Image (cartoon, rainbow, N blue to C red; front, top):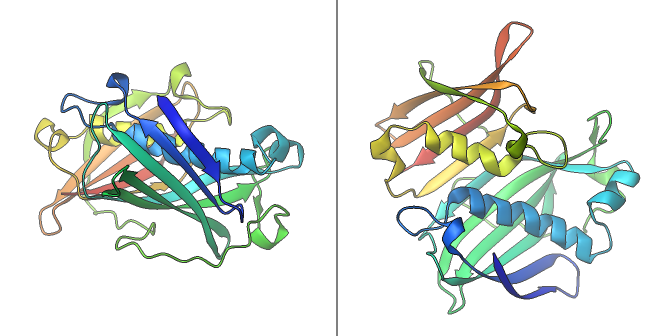
Length: 254
């Protein structure tokens, strides 16, 4: 990725950067892959903390790790190869036990491309016990609450799901927290869709991250199309003690 100007707002609640999208970040239609969009969102959150002197290693030493739990994206238009864009991440008011972040992807001329929100939990990196926001000493004091039509909430899963395939979790899928990196989940959702849906224009998509999955485990992918809502639901499950439990849930609106 080609990076230009970046900066932290004076109140420390917002981080803005300029990026140029390159060939390797885009698909056959020359539009940016959704996994790249999600990687930008995660990386900008980490950079927001780094710029405040609280990078991932610092937080880990203090007994904290950040894990995304839900995300929601609205797409006006996907940016294309060689397009220069401006990305903004903002801290928002926590939603009960979770931290809320909002994102904007715009052209340098100000055209709104993508808006998104994500919910994150603070956990102890060793025990994975959840840390309440009021116990997180580096909590950003934000009262901002922006609106998004499809909030990062619970996804309604159809009763009948069709088996779409399975994916072994490999070394290249794993991040610094030792599990499947969150940006890869959207790849699993899209890669196992019927081909006619893979090239369709998406309007919105939501992801729920349910259970960590690690190197060597098998993700079984299931899905169903809801014609009434014009949405495709994809669920990735893993075997745990003989039971299939959800690792992620995704819904894609067309």
